[in-house]
Image (cartoon, rainbow, N blue to C red):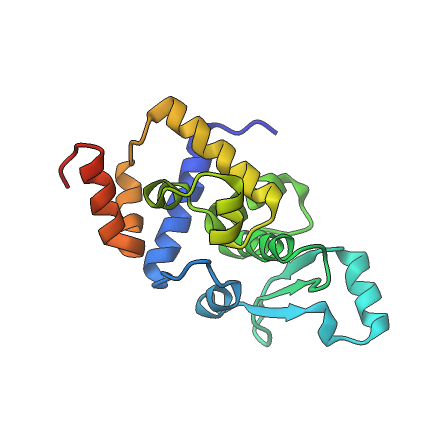
Length: 195
């Protein structure tokens, strides 16, 4: 589905605000810590008996989000035996987007944006730029993502550099100063700019 660049920029800004508001600094991003800070329960399918796991996999082979109610906190259920660690992590961050935006997870309309949200949350492109992490293997290692997600991030980096060079956008600066101010300052100096 085609989305204009403003849609993606707004998602990036929301993610950056989450990093700042919840003081998220560690890399690779820990999905359990993020969910705890956001007040979302994280429940692996393996916590249930075999029959219940079959029902959960019928609902979704990888995971799903259930909105909170007065008696229950918002919860992400995920298949902890699904594919790779990176795929499981993407599932969780995909579902975090549904929580943050208060979306109905049964509506496929938002799934492409939830995938983008999950990938960007785990692999914020400006951070990878200032750290010099651009190759797929480096991204897998630094961000603990799947090769597919790393390929997507590497492609985004190449496209961004082709279009904007090493430019850092104003809305990205607070994230970079928050995650690694020293690396950001070195990056800016190396580009011949002042901070």
